[in-house]
Image 1 (tube, protein in one colour):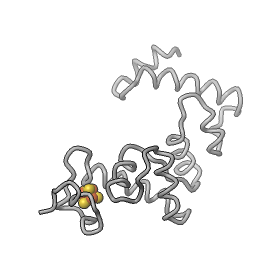
Image 2 (cartoon, rainbow, N blue to C red):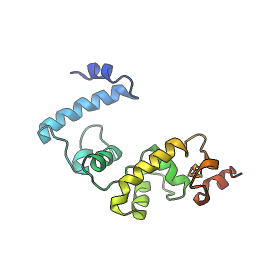
Image 3 (cartoon, rainbow, N blue to C red):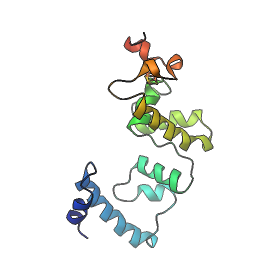
Length: 147
Ligand code: SF4
């Protein structure tokens, strides 16, 4: 299958042209270097085409039960609003969060940050009035949103 053919199959996904290219390249590398198996270390995962720190962490944590706290856009935003990190780079935010959590809590925390970011602490209009973390969170006061 060519990247163009695969792109047609995954058109519903964002950035589908780039993704189709990387899926084909990563599949080739898996066959060449790993007998067609997905490797189980973050380093090996990150060495695959199109796989960055976040994706490697997700696969490591979910598929292999490893301890990881991948920082996507939701984790990044919620952690910074809650003042759990003031770092600008996602890898530094990850470092700050990891310090607060035991290894077995990190993947669950990743999912909880994402769920909270999607449902309540949304990027454009966070629902601070309905948020269970409101009393702990400096953001509404900083933004003058506390009612
Ligand atoms: S109070 Fe507002 S900014 Fe803070 S975590 Fe909740 S929704 Fe997000």
